[in-house]
Structures are given as structure tokens and as C-alpha cells.
Amino acid sequence: LMRNAGEVEFHQAAFEVLESLGPVVDKHPQYADEGIIRRLCEPERQIIFRIPWVDDRGTVHVNRGFRVQFNSALGPYKGGLRFHPSVYLGIIKFLGFEQIFKNSLTGLPIGGGKGGSDFDPKGRSDGEIMRFCQSFITELARHIGEYVDVPAGDIGVGGREIGYMFGQYKRMTNRWESGVITGKGLDWGGSRVRTEATGYGTVYYLREMMRHQNADFDGMRCVVSGSGNVAIYAIEKVHALGGKVIAASDSAGYIVDEDGIDLELMKQLKEVERARISEYAVRKPSARYVAGGSIWDVPCDAALPCATQNELDDNGAKALLAGGCKYVVEGANMPCTPRAIELFKQADVRFGPGKAVNAGGVATSALEMQQNASRDSWTFEYTEQRLEHIMTDIYKRCAETAEEYGKPGDLVAGANIAGFLRVAGAMDALGVV
Ligand code: NDP
Image (tube, rainbow, N blue to C red; front, side):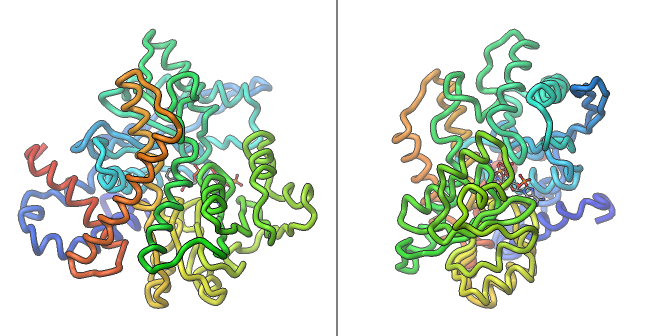
């Protein structure tokens, strides 16, 4: 704790994983002897840098940039960039730590890393966003590369930002190195299904959890928090599989639409106009907007927190239980507090942890890297099939590992242990490095 003072989110993420590893160390004592767990908790490298940029009025701003290259035993560091004012080292380290196990679970050759900045993109013009992204990547460029570290998007970083960063990187290096970053546009090296991947994957994972209980989406009422990239495509897939999403949110409030969220309207507002979600109820008066408040007060069968860390606490969990919720799947990273997860466990609510549930995003990023390396471009259908297969496999591995290590039904333990075993095996083989 002293060694990483003040990094509360990192402590929370590390504690959750370490808590699961007791049965693993009993079975494989060499992992403790070789310091694998201690090495896993210490990033291989952390980079912190200055990002100076000029706004539209000519004022100079200085933000702070981060890249934590956590573990490269399985492949080049891989993980997104987050632009949000709450970003500091503790957030990037928690996300990077989670990423190690998530990437391991995909079965693909990718290590774990994460980065970002405390820059707030809200209300900034296109020109300001471009200048910020150019300044950010100008420094980061010296630390990344197809075989080194491959960033992607996260909160506040979507296709527009990836474009500005890739453009500046290309200009600086005079190379078309498409494998240096993922989440690119389809015309310039991107992969089909990457935009949809995290949301779709989240719902595929939920479908597997339900299948296991002989349930399906027919008649399911779902609540999805957030209205960004993950939330929008989770809603799309729930609707495609026959369920109904009746509520969504942003950081200012939530909307309830008993007809089921109108996705075309949502995409227009969030992807095109970059408007607030309150606007949804203005354009569709039969829907209701609640300013502030907690979206978890809306009764549902399944809850999909897809916004941010610690957005669902014990009060949220109690409200969900009172509303009859039977499934909770984490589309976001660490959206549920430890106390909320404990309450779900006690009430026998089926719970899917983020590092398994939302792994479809990074998995499809790895598929983008495969297409870039072979200068190929796959169809939507084929790419989605690969994603579906990967998600089904992750669920199966979580469930089987939980069973094997004496925790049947505990997908948190299953994900942590299965993710750990693959990285630990590689670290063991590579020696003390
Ligand atoms: P976006 O920036 O596209 O959307 C984030 C959404 O969450 C917005 O609706 C935003 O509302 C809301 N939100 C963000 N911060 C807060 C906050 N502090 N309080 C309340 N609401 C908040 O991000 P993504 O959809 O890409 O990411 C969402 C989550 O999913 C994150 O935890 C991310 O790490 C995780 N994730 C994303 C992946 C991806 O492929 N994009 C892959 C795996 C995980 P507002 O606009 O008001 O800020």
C-alpha cells in the first residue's frame, strides 16, 4: 500500500485479483517462489509526460499524459487511452493491471498496458481536439510501435481521436505502420466490428450466462448505464437477440423509455451531435429524463453497467435487488464496488466481471492487428463470428476454471484464475526478467 500510496483504484483492482489466487498458489507453489505475483503487481515501465497545447483563443494549456506498460509476457503491451479529467496514475494503473488478465483471457498474443490524460474533451472544438491529440502522440510516439505497444480508444477516445493520433504518428515517422494503433477507420486500416465489439461481446457473455440457466433474452428488461461506445452497441445487441433496453444514462442523468431505447435517435445524439442524453426525452416526449439520480432504481431483469469505475455501489446494488434483477454484467471496467459484488453474491444474482465480459473490444483490436499484419480486410460476418467464438470460449473458460478450483459458479474467481494462469505460465518460461 505504501509503495503505491494514494492509488486507490489500483489497490482495489489488485486486491480483487490477489484475493482469488489462494487456490492457485496452493496448487502451483512455484508461482509464489519465483515472485511472479510480486512482479505482476509492478509495471514493467511507467511513462508520465507533459502535453502542452493551444486552445482556439490562443491560451496555452498543460495536461499530463500517462502510459503504463504493465506486462509483456504474452505479447506487445495492448490497452486503450482514456481522456477524462479524473485520470491520474492510480486509474491508469488499475486499468493496465486489469488489462493483463483480460488480454490473457482472450487467448491472443497481447500483453497489458493502458494510458491517457487528464484532458477534458467536453465542449472542445474539433480543432482543439486535434491539436491536443497531436501533442499527446508526439511524446507517446517514441514509446509505442507494432512490436512494442499498441494503444487504442477508451473513455473520451473514439474514431476521431485515433485518426488525429495516427495521422500525426505517420507524419512523424514517415511510415504507414497501421499496426501501431487500433480502432482505426475502415478506409485506413481499421477492422469491421471493432466499433461494436465491446458492447456486442458484453451481450454475448450475458447470453452464455443465461444459457447456462436455460434462459434467453425473450421478454428480458435490461438497464444499460452510459451512452458511449460500449453502451450503444450493448443496446443494439440486446435488441437483436430479442431483449429490451429501457434505460440508459450519461454523467448528468438517465432516461427511461418503456418502448425500448430508440437506437437510431441515440446514435444521432451521441455519435453525430455529441449531445447530452437529456435531449433524448426532448426529441421523444414519451420517454422520461431524470436529472442526477441513480439509473439502478429502474426495475429490470439484467443490469449492464457500461459507463465507468465504481458507478454501481451498495446502494445501487440494493436498488437492483429490490427491482428483481437477476444478472449483472460489467461492460465497463470495474463499475461495481466490492461491496456491491458481495451483495449480488449473497442474493444469488449471476455476476459477470469486466475483465471477462468486456474483453471483446481488445480481442477485436487483436484481430485488427492480424488484418494489418497480413494487409487483409475481413468481412463483418466473419469478424463477428470470430468475436462470438472468442466470447463463448472466455465464458466457458471462466466457468470451468471456477469449477476446477473449487468455486463453482464464481465467474470472478474463474476469470482471475484463468487469466493469471496463462500469464504466469509465460512469465515462468521467460525467466526472472
Ligand atoms: P465513452 O467515452 O464512449 O462513453 C462513456 C460513457 O460513460 C458516457 O456516456 C459518459 O457520460 C459515461 N461516463 C464516463 N465517466 C463517467 C462518470 N465519471 N460518471 C458517470 N458517467 C460517466 O467510453 P466507452 O464506452 O468506450 O467506455 C465505457 C467503459 O467501458 C469504460 O469503463 C471503459 O474502460 C470500458 N471499456 C471500453 C472498451 C472499448 O472498446 N471502448 C473496451 C473495454 C472496456 P458523459 O458523456 O456524460 O461523460
